[in-house]
Length: 162
Ligand code: SME
Image (cartoon, rainbow, N blue to C red; front, side, top):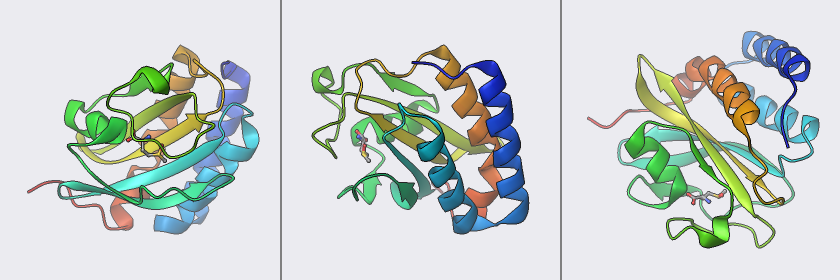
């Protein structure tokens, strides 16, 4: 799957509009909702904020809640994205020893750091029911979304490790 450039450009305008209209957790919830309904291969969309050594689920949209509402940064694909300060793409979660399972239907996952002044303050986490659902266009698009969510994550109370 992929996100075509015209669709990405239109979606980024929507994200800008949401981030201009709403603040903090309300903005994050609205962006999760927008991404989940707009892209078929995004089955579950969440945003975590970083609180010291732990990721805390701030907002999500999808068919079911996850039990992983708090994730220590030494665990999971979510933790690795913080430790590496890098986007993580896993084409087959069943083959990943680091993967923390949320939903039986999940086959692939992307985790994109949200940064403030270069430091990770949170992340976008997206699960797909399709194997290898995320390509370079998803990565580029979601990194652009992440840069637009920096202010909202900080406003929701993100605290980088001391
Ligand atoms: N799979 C993630 C945990 C979060 S759920 O996907 C919502 C991980 O491995 O860190």
